[in-house]
Amino acid sequence: MSSILDNFIKYTIPAFWIVLLVVQAGIIPKIVAYSILGIYIFLTVLFLFNNPRLFMHKAFTVLIIMSIATLLYFLMFDPTLAGFEYFAARTVTFTMLAIAIYYYHDFLVENYVKIIIWFGFAFLLYGVMTNHNFGGRYSGPFWNPNSLGWVASLLFGLTLFEFEKGRKKYLLLIFFLALALMSGSRAAFGGIVLAFLINGQISLKSLLFLIFAFIILMIGQKVASQYGFHTGLERLITSEHTKHGLLSGRESEWIYSLEAIMKQPISGYGLDHYAHIPDEILRKHGVFRVDRGFAANPHNSFLAVMIQFGLVFGTFILAMLIYYIGKIIVKGCPRKSLLFMTIYSFLSAGVESYLFSVSGFEGFTFWSALPLCLMTIYTHNRKKVPS
Image (cartoon, rainbow, N blue to C red; front, side):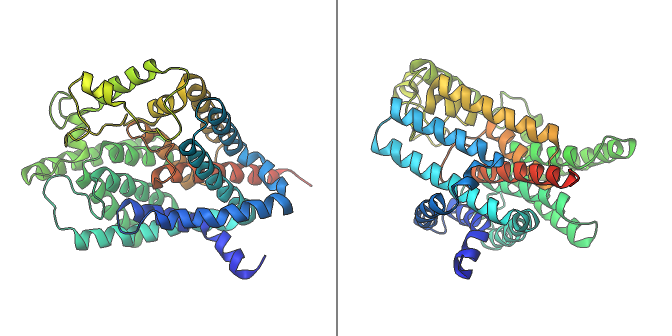
């Protein structure tokens, strides 16, 4: 491969993550991300002829199965242009991941997470410098506070795993923790807890630390509430029947999503309806898409895939993902940062509809971390086998 092509493939995954992040903030158009995928259409054909065996590696089985399931659903239930566009975008993204991970696994293991951390820090710092609307839930460079919370929590966990103890690590952790709490995102708060659970074993010292941290957070929440901030902690401990409670409207969206699933349980609603609640169900409950206080999507990726693919295909896809998540937990991913990326992005999909989107950075985080984690496990096990 030429040096230009070599570097393009090497940096594709972190570069694509960065592009999707900036697209989410509305700073650049989606066409930039689609342009990268367009280049990979030609690379896919090239590698299918030159080295088709790379796609058969065990680390990419989950991507192959997902692509085949999408193709079968397209042929059986959604043979439309929109359906084909979704299938093509999803498959090319998976191909991009397979090619980059196959050839540059070691580079990505050492550098993907670090690139995310440092670019994420610079980007969130830019958000703090340009968005001074600190009243209520803070959104930083994004329009949605949940996006800020999701990224800040991810970066907090990755920093916890990747850096040695020192001033730099603690300053980054404080910065990311502060933004996660200011966002008021409950998923972000859960991500921080998950990072601590994955990072260490339960001991008297860790229990005392958690108790101390909880006391500090409670004090911080009280202070924040005096200035109008709605922190993730506040939204967790407030009664679920209040405006900022535990579910805060999610229960209605999940009920509507279940109704949508039962309305078309076998065929689903189509590949381009990955976060969809039909208008007729919304009207039945007196809700309209233009309502500012209500987002007309399932806010749950596991319900969303059932709406999109139907119960048969949706159940198969979820069972497959749960199997592979269990596999990396049981086998033990040697890189804890990759394990955290995979589990966090999967679990937090329970409160957002991003996992099966073709253009969201949250979903890309999961689909890039899972095969990279699997490849790391297989490579590590192979090195342990005596020659």
